[in-house]
Length: 164
Image (cartoon, rainbow, N blue to C red; front, side, top):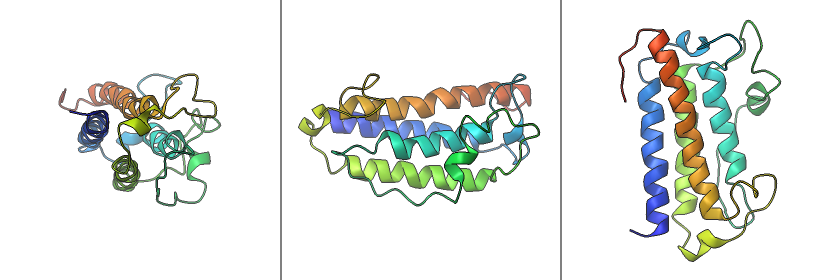
């Protein structure tokens, strides 16, 4: 397996897990906070989706991301994460569809890269965390998995089946 193949596998597997963890949640379930002050699932999945469009937008990475709904990034920014009661969030179906479209755009752009392209240096605020394009794409997969782990806590709180 080569680097591009490994990153594609990570992106696809974390996409599957995110969609699986969201699969039996209702729209109302998405607004449940695992603890006071913690982010609810709707904010988190919106944040992951909006951030992926930014994380993988590097000069050496040409992805054609779908246009996010108006004010989507703002709705899922730090300014709204503690808003009580939560309002203006999308449905589970809308989040799943948009997340899948964004992830597919990331994978399609990845498929145009060679393993050597993964060594290209990154720019901007994420360069300290992920100094190469390959590291940034792995971080993108890890970011969605980190939040999916937080979805598990909400699932437990709601009495949903343990999935993983």
